[in-house]
Image (cartoon, rainbow, N blue to C red; front, side, top):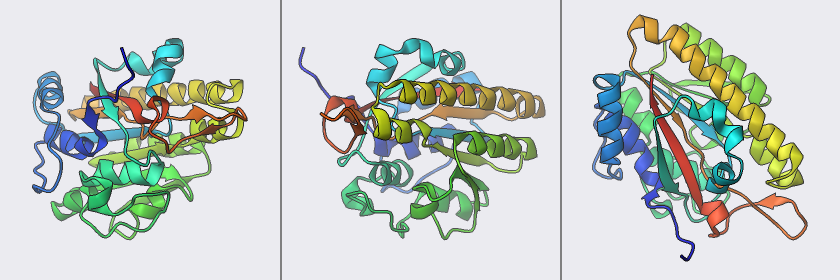
Amino acid sequence: MADRFNCYPLMQFAGTVAACMDFPLPEQYAPPVDWVVTLMKEKLGGPADRLVLYHADAIGNFLFSQYPEYFAPVQRHFPISVPFVSTIESVTPVAHASMYTGMSPDGHGIKTYTRPVLTCDTLYDRLIAAGKKPCICATAGGTFHHIFNERPMEYVKGINGTEVLAKTLELIEEDKYDVISIHDCDYDDAAHAYGPESKEAKNALSLMCERFDAMAEKIKEIYAPRGHKTLLTFSPDHGQHATLSGKGTHGSTCMEDMNILHFFAAL
């Protein structure tokens, strides 16, 4: 069988997580993946009142296929995986803009690796307008702190994935945000420098999965006893492939760059 793209475009992400909260979005947003919404609300016993959205940068579908043992700390929390396909170009600003606007690159305007502040409507804008409190926790200087900037919401910065995790755990402990978006770039950085299957990249991947596990356990410790219904996702933006030099890159339409898996859990 020939290689093929996964079936769900990334622009369906915003609609899917919003629908899990029974949170209406304007018609310009791509529709939700309905079966995911139905299953998550069944498992939650109703709509979610907390979203924790973990974006592991550059984790391609092929890594799950080739190194499933690395993902054991992640998969222990998740009942389902969803095959998403990245944007063209398959780079972080384009992909995350589509994820949070529900639009194609032609719609939101970021088509290459540029990081302007988005002036179009985003999921964050909808949440803020409805009186909800979103928060971004990401590496300082990263894409999330550029393209989603200049909104009346909380922006938390860390120097690397370890510090981003520590700050995320503090945010969960505070329990004052309806939505927390986390962006962890450590695997992407290592894969660019040493190759997507190098020991350095695989070490970064392993540490990311362990950090995710700690975050999920904190949600169970803090949110669950307080009666919160939490939708937790593990949601990469694109994958990465090796160049002839052995280092990693992305932005092409090859399967390694385009095909990604998202995991959804009800906690």
